[in-house]
Length: 420
Image (tube, rainbow, N blue to C red; front, side, top):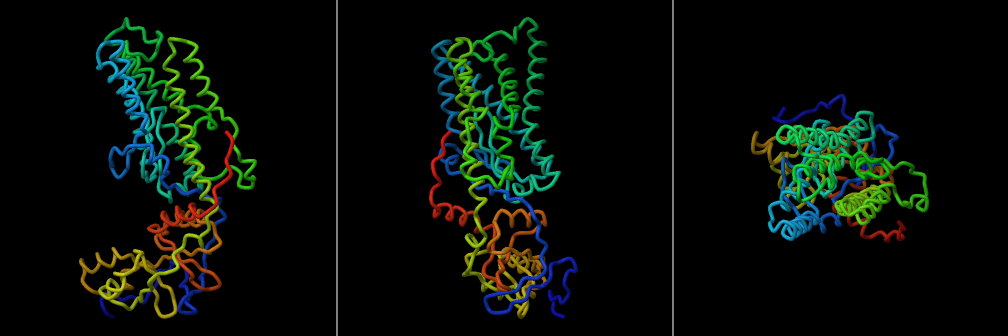
């Protein structure tokens, strides 16, 4: 038998799918899971327009909201006016940045410990918004462990803030026992150490607000609370978080030494708006069907082809993963990168020795989020054939899904304006 050839099939792989015509296949046995939908996690265009990229750290893209540099300008201006210098204003701004950094670093570590793949963090003065990979977003609430991971990521931020606040308190009392850390105002240019303490405590307290007030939990929620509700019944009313933000602003205006509450309330309103938009984008994706985003033009490879021939045939294809057939049967899939790597490392051989044999199936009328949830739980999903009437009418790949989903949203009519 030539090198790379194989006639055996993994006993745990799904049944071989038969091709009944040149453009179709029949579905083999497939396990269907009755799971509620989970929204996709595409990047939000509003977030991109109102943020600045900081860089990519450990594979995670970090962006900051434009309010950070505006807050720096405000702090420096107030410092120059009241203290005839810029040092205290810059130090107060760094205290706020440090509190946000502690919170989001703790949440990122908790997400990594839970096995979640973090794609990006979007930082605001009252916290941050996390974007996970599609497979993690689909499984966060599919299992008990996913729900525990959600709670752990949510709670790790305020725990880290409170722990850091206690450390700052102990440090302050050790170097200046006479310092009054409870005096008003808690956050001011006149006492940077006290400001560092209270920025940690206040940010941790905001993170512990009820779920209706804190959109961080809504962002981590991947399943709609009631899929049967009509669009009219889902119109949000004035949330507890919005009311609290307005109350902060009014208290800061009416009480002179609580002026810092005005900025905190404004940033909380901004945070609520940004995360509400992110959650709404995920909810809109719940209605997208597989047939709307599947690829209908693709290249078929034969398992008896050599790696060199297969690579030559894939040069002019727009997708990077290809179905592999043996006669009239679909037997697996393979990526262009795998073909190239096998060719460079082991020389030319048959395609069937390098292909992946585990192939999940999808129906064109299934919701895309249901399919992504199912394949994420099964640990597959790079290549998903779409089956209708015993024929393969298209394929799904992660490479094309992001672009296709955005195009489908652009072609759909705009939703009616909601009142808040």
